[in-house]
Image (cartoon, rainbow, N blue to C red; front, side):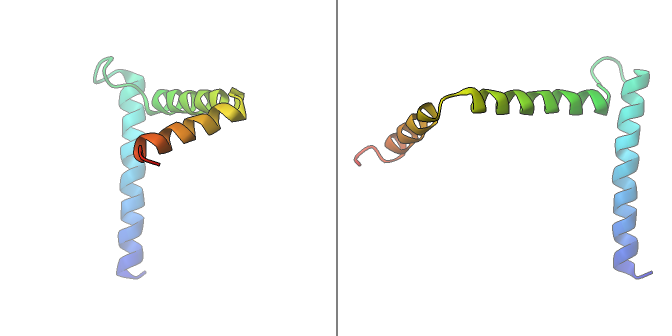
Length: 79
């Protein structure tokens, strides 16, 4: 195994160990309520992303176009 491949694998192992410890500490409550489990954080992020996508897709196309025009006017007010 080359030195680069070994370094890469050790990095992946370290990140995996970090994420596993994060989940374990959160699930067991070893750091109190201020340390949520990784799964709870990822679920919250997924809910936020899906909610934002739903809000964007539910808005009419003209509203998105008007927002873009307003952004251009703010950026270049003398156009």
